[in-house]
Image (cartoon, rainbow, N blue to C red; front, top):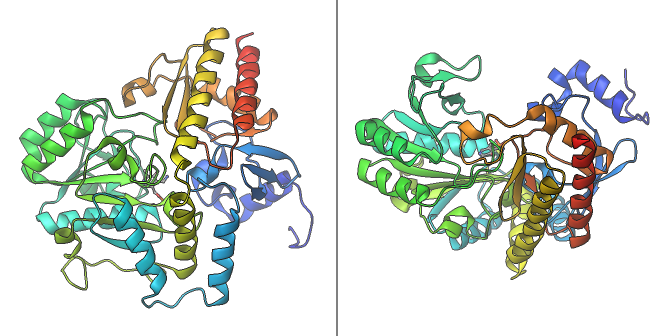
Length: 434
Ligand code: PMP
């Protein structure tokens, strides 16, 4: 038994955690199953760095899986959280902070006329789907293989090898009849999506997509893909949902929809929006959003929705981002220097691999020359990635522990961090090649 006051190292903490939490974690990817070994137990973070329970410091490229675009413990965010906590942490009643955050979202995200705040990305996508089904009276949805939208039953589904197969659930506990309502297409497959929407569009309530795929590693949309989704969903009368839980405020202040100039019907936000606190949102056209209770027939609710502390953190983060006119330019520069450096390291070490990047989200794929689709991504060399991950950890870089995740650069990183990262990656790749 681990006494609360005992000073324990990472190994002790994780061993004891295994006794009281399944796999020792509260979310499966944290367990490092994909790369082997026990995870580092984090004690604290500051700026671009995290420190583990053993006092070892790492340059952090996980950023809590995306939220920390300002880095850890940004002073303005910490101050907003403390100030709000002193005034009460939750009321379950309307607050002025909610109005301010909702207004900021409406001002920044082109598709959003009205918004509802929730506590997680999963809640946002689940609610957006229900709204789309309620609004259209249709039951099917269409998603893409390799896109993740939270652990919503209906979304824990991917196709078999075909472009469109009868869907089977990815997780035990998802009823097969529910999964059968989820159709699956291939990301970046323009003809495949056209044909599904052409033949079955009238049954489909919503098409949900990560406008930049981030959960099969970063896979950008091919030119014309998002445009086609907009055209074809409009033609079929289905609701186009952009899941911008990762990309919202990450690839630009107006999200991927602003960056690529495509306006969906509904958008899901999370991660950066909450400034590192549990907060997410879904929003869109007024005609759709007004079908939510209490105005409409689609029920959706939450005791801690629009939580004042989370809202204060989110507002502080958005204010900080909006106050920095060059924020996204800086992120682009950091990302671009990292991308070019990694490409160079692949070339000089004669390692097969490729780098995909949109702004500050980036994946190094090992073992494949290109990663434009789920099919290509599936051939990545996950064993080589695990060795690369270990090597980078030894070099003092904390990367996402899976080939199929994004690294995130933040405004707390400096050029020197990128240069050190590239140099370390080159050393690790050289060791792996030799
Ligand atoms: N959508 C996307 C695109 C995500 O990446 C995630 C989480 N990684 C979610 C939804 C679910 O968000 P949450 O983990 O906050 O439920």
